[in-house]
Image (cartoon, rainbow, N blue to C red; front, side, top):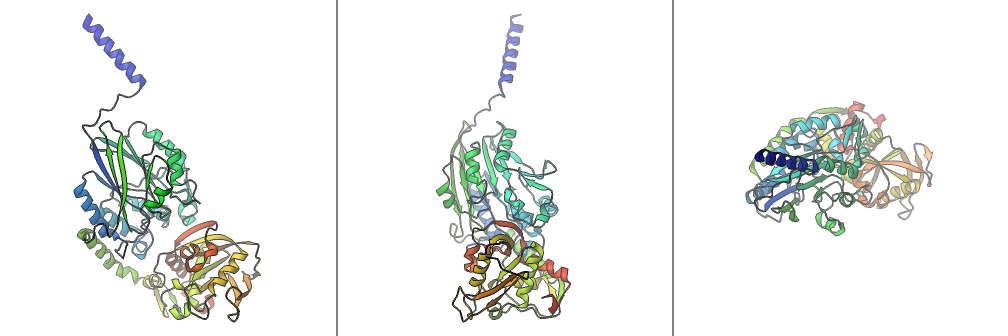
Length: 500
């Protein structure tokens, strides 16, 4: 009878404990070390070039670190699948193959990862050997991607969750994200942490949000508002680690590598036996860090295979031209050529802007009479610049045109190739006072009016001294200039003099 009473008391105690909360998690046998390697905003810089590591060298870094630290995980923070021809020719498939070869474990989506459209992005996700995590991307009230994943790493419960930038709603081609919404990252993070509850000892956010002052919120604001996040791997603003550390005063470690694969981020974490975070240290691995480290032969062989296989794709015909399209350096940097007109017109066509401006320095070759191939287009526009639209005043338009012709008669990359706008130039006048009779779509320029300008992101960011574009309101973002031109040529079929 006494034994029965004891069992009954024990059962009651266990029931009471269950009502209060889940049983406590057992402590770890000892400290556990975890290493995270991360990249962001590579924009398909797949080849090694100067300070840019390329995937074969990234693969070698991953191999070296994994040999030193068993619990190593590799993460990408987005803007990865689109950019240069090696990615765009296969609509991202070449990059998924390279990422699989390197051995990534997770990624989140950047705004440019939507540039091929949402359906293609979902196809690319299926090609990856690892999940895309993005908690705040919704369609028809449901998350498009997996929000988070909890991994057991040597007994430590680590929750990884992803966030996409809400700016994706206007920083990719709007046709590619129809029906998709991007919820507030702060509110979504609180929701994710509530779903995770007490299942995780360490929470890692893969955040394509950035720290630009114009962004709302920034990853620093996210860290301040959601203190349950231990580590934020950041992207989108192309910011390097030291710049973030100079501004981040929260208790959350935030790290980023800059852009274009110029560094691999490394975070070393120690979890104490009581499951608390004992230490976290972030740093960057650059080409100089492991000088002499040879590229991963497996990844290098795959890269070479992709490049060789794309040779045939580059020779695919996309249209024809009945006239030579002139892109000679001495011409496009001193006068508007028919090729410059075609490129500017292609931007006007896809964006619906009031005017378009393309700097002559971005035009790198001519296209002869006859068939136009993808090779022609990617040779003419090789830099992977994105078409963007901004709001600016008529006074800014005038200032931009003045900047564009300010070096004449000397050849200069700033020379403006335009569409939707006409103007007169008098090179006998001093720089800054050479442009007159400006008309936009046939109407006289109104200095006080707001116009929508389309241009490559290089120019909108102030390249070639187009400083009047910096800080202006971004209206929308579109695919690369080469893709925009390709689509426009396909639309025209045959380029003739009367279409220029």
